Structures are given as structure tokens and as C-alpha cells.
Length: 119
Image (tube, rainbow, N blue to C red):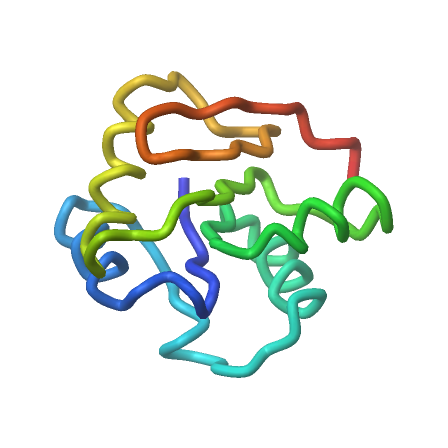
């Protein structure tokens, strides 16, 4: 699965995920300041799983019913260092068969998932 890192994902983590073999684009590198609804639109249009620290994407997808990407991973913790998000995401990916169609809330030591609505 290809990824889109929201602007709030540290570039250190983006680079670590790339080094681990993930195809990941970064809003910080390509379009800093892009509003959330445009980030969501880009992830949907390019079929990229969205990685973010911003809980507003749940509101945009589940309440406002904006088109959603193939998956969303919402990180819900304050990272101890800029590389920690990549480490936590890597650990989650080792536990899941697929992210497709899921909104995942990822804490430092656990995660829960909810099916995305039909978009």
C-alpha cells in the first residue's frame, strides 16, 4: 500500500518508513499548508493510505462524508522523538494483514480499527 504522510508526521519518520521499503509521500515536502479536506481529497484521488496525528480526519470522513482514502492511520500519542511514529507504525503493520478499508486509531502500545464508510 502506498502512503501519504500528513504535514504533522515528522520527516524523520517519513524517511525511516522509506528506508523500511514503504512508498510514502509527504505533505511537508510537497504541499505544506494544504488544508485537511484537500489532503483527504489527494489521498482519495491517488489511492494513498493517510498517516496523521490529526483527529479531524475522522470528522471529515464519518460525519461530513467526504471521500475517503483506502485507509487512515490516526496516531494518538505524543511522540518521544521524531522517529517514534515510524517505529510504532512498523509494529502495527507487523500485526495486521491489511489496512484496506480501515480507520485505525494507533496508540503507542495498541490500536483499534473501524471500517471506513463506503466512499
